[in-house]
Length: 201
Ligand code: GRF
Picture (cartoon, helix red, strand yellow):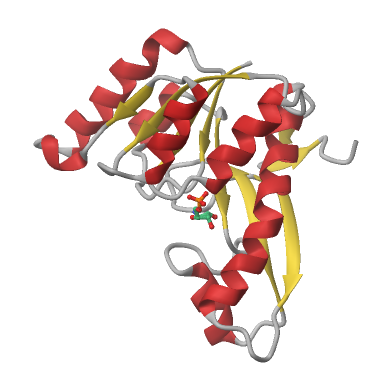
């Protein structure tokens, strides 16, 4: 499978995916990285991989539609079979998503449907939950709402801060994202009535 990764920041999930591809743990090849933030460290990681880096700086475009069209035009040649949103901090429009129906996979640092949106780890702490975690899901126009592929959990400790909880969740994000994308690339997943099946190997 041909993979394109979208990311906005540090890139630890992007690195995890790339390294898994290189190790043969994901049956894919990383064709390009798309980033929306000038100077984001993830672009340096992609350059180290020798992968084409596409910077789509939202501020350079007059509208969201033009911004998205630029990205669509830039990635079209790669004919992506899967787009992985690895800490990509923009919402993609329904038009964009429809171009890659059920081929866009996102990771979110909470157990959806709880705690959608930004600062999910903080939301979990403020809610006083004792179990937190991450969710890998197919992307639909609604934010953090698509069919769930895999989830992993971590305990919330009494002395947790947003940072300590985020770090604990992050350790589960990488293997969970890798496994979910691997299952997808091996065509193991099917969606029945909005529910993903085929994840228990
Ligand atoms: C991850 O926690 C991811 O779940 C969230 O943003 C963070 C990105 O981290 N969407 P990184 O850039 O992958 O290190």
